Amino acid sequence: MRIRSLWIVVSTLSMVGCATTTPVPPANPALATLTKRENLPGKPGCFLRSNFSGDWTVLNDTTLIVRAPLPKDAYVIKLFEPVTDLQFKQRLGFEDKEHSGEICNNGDDYLVIPDWQHRVPIVAVHALTAADQNALLQAAGKPLRHP
Image (cartoon, rainbow, N blue to C red):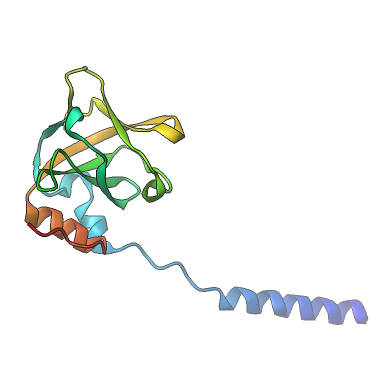
């Protein structure tokens, strides 16, 4: 009888634990829509790898904004695969397959994460206007850039 009572108590507690867990909030639907490859704002473009001085903002684990060389020269970059904890990376770099010095929208370039020792293919690079940049930042809940 004691075993049965103990089993009932354990079963009840485990059900209570499941009922009280809080669900993970869904990702921002506006950001998810804006960062799909086919919906990226701006026009396909390129920037010089040498102009990138380490100014970037992570929108989600597959999308970031880089500024090269100045904050007004912004580009949204879409990655082929997610990079977990991208927002916590201290350094980022780029590698261009063609050795032209440009990071372009042609799918031949890589995001390089030095501490991770991994290259992630870039599937899109779009030049952004100030309004495009602010729309992405707002959808991601990040501080807006002012001209």
